[in-house]
Each structure stands twice: as structure tokens, then as C-alpha cells.
Image (cartoon, rainbow, N blue to C red; front, side):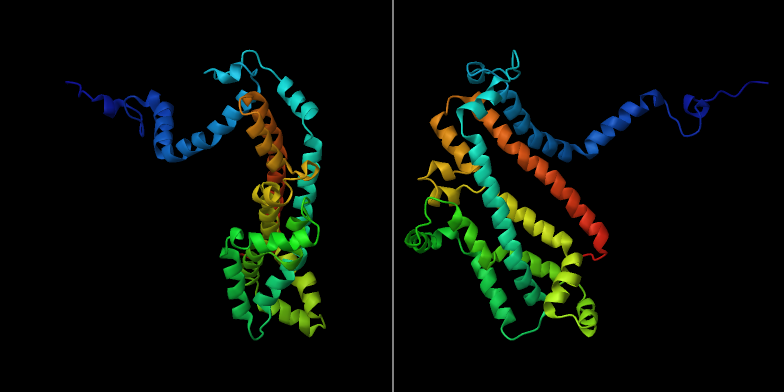
Amino acid sequence: MTAVSQSPLARSPRGSAPGSARGPHRSLLVWIAEHAALVALGVLTIAPIVFVILTSLMSSNQALTASILPRPFDFSNYARVFTELPLAQWFGNSSLYAVLATAFMLVSSVPAAYALAQIKFKGANLIFTVIIVAMLLPPQVTAVPVYVMWSELHLTGTLWPLILPNLLGDAFSIFLLRQFFMTIPKEYGDAARMDGCSEWGVLWRVVVPMARPGIASAAIFMFFHSWNDYYGPLLYASENQAAWPVAYGLATFRGQHGTDWSMTMAMTVVVMVPVVVIFFFAQKAFVEGIALTGVKG
């Protein structure tokens, strides 16, 4: 009796095919093909950061060459940043600016956004329209009269003209918070009012705990805007070096030492580190706030 010959495919185990030994390799290629765009975007995002870090570890002469890797790694640029520049003072000015601006914004913008979102009153839509117009208005349009006002108050040469206006609210923050407060059911506030809560009580005891994700987002936006602000310090504090924040100090140093790329990149890395650390902590708080609220926008 003649044995029936079987093809290689028929003899292979179920679910396998010729060349199955290359399965993991093929899976990796398929994954790369499916995520090619994300991989490309990731490389484009990380490459400049890696370039800045590697350049900061080069000597001043090597940074002017086409070398990619430092030979040898030179960490003295980071020591020079702290010894040759008033970096601690610049960090203190940026911290003062960012922290106070964020705190003042929250104190003024949260009640304003709550009123526009949860309280019905005549003219609310008109006020909201004015806020949107103020948000879209370029700051250069009002720069001259506002500067004259602060000059008459003898506050130019400091960061106070950038900090104090946040006590009157920030248009973008009010818009962002108002849109988030709109997602909170008004029944919670009505129940609190029936229990005897005033509007302030409803705001701080009911709405604010439920709106932590939105408040955290507004605070993050304001903090990073203030920390990275260059135009404002250029306009008001450029004449007083003791009031410079890190963003303006870095730009000034880069303009004066344009060929010392290794030290410029070292200073850039030092300025980036606090922002990256704060971002990760803020991101964690933001995610935890979403998990605790139970309210989804």
C-alpha cells in the first residue's frame, strides 16, 4: 500500500506555517509597520532633547565640531552655570512669578467661572462673550497703555506688573474652568442649598472638590505659562537684572555667548529639569483627581 505523501504545510502543527521560527521577528516587523508614524514622532520628539544633553557634556571646542558623542564627557559646564551666572536668583524670580500668578489666578478665576457656569443671572452670556474677546485679544494691542499705567505706579523694573493682574482673573482660565464646571450636575448644588449652604459654601464644599481635574489643569497651564514667559519680563523687567526670571536670563545669556554652545545647552538642561519634574508630579495629581471625582466631562 502506497503511503500518501503530505505537503510541508499539512505536516506542520496546527496554527503554524513554514518559517514559523521567524514568528517573533515577523511580529516585531508588523508592530513597527503598524506604529511607524508614532515611532517617527517619538524619535522627532526625543532627538532634540538627546542632542541638547549630549552637547552640554562636550567641551566648548568640541561643541563647534560635527561630533555627536562627547569625547570625553565633560560635566564642568554644569558647575560653570552655577558659578558664573546668578542662576539661583533667576530661579527664585521665576518661582515667585509662577507661584503667585497661579495662586492669584485660582483665587479670582474659580469664583468667576463658578458664577458663569452654575448661577443664572442677567448678562451672563454678555460677560462670557467679553471674556472670550479678552482671551483672543493679542497682548501687544494693550501693551503701551498698560505699560504707562504700571510706570505711573512705579512698578516697572519688577515682575509685579505680570503678577498682580491675575488678581482680576485670567480670561483663558475662566473659560477653561467655566467649561469644566458646566459638566457638574446642578442637582448637587441644589441639594447643598436645601441643606442651608450659601453660594460660597456650595462652591468650596461641593463644586471645588468635584472640579479638581479642571482646577489642576488651569493651574498647570498658568504655572508653565508664567515659568516660560519671555515677552512679559522683556517688557517690564529687562532694565533690572535682579528681577530676571530664568526664561529671560537664558535668552540673554544665549545672545551674549552665542558661540559657547556647551554651556548654553547645560543651562538649558538645568532650566528644563524643574519643569519636567513638576510636570510629572502635576500629571499624577491630575490623574488621581479624575479617579476621585466620579464626574466625567
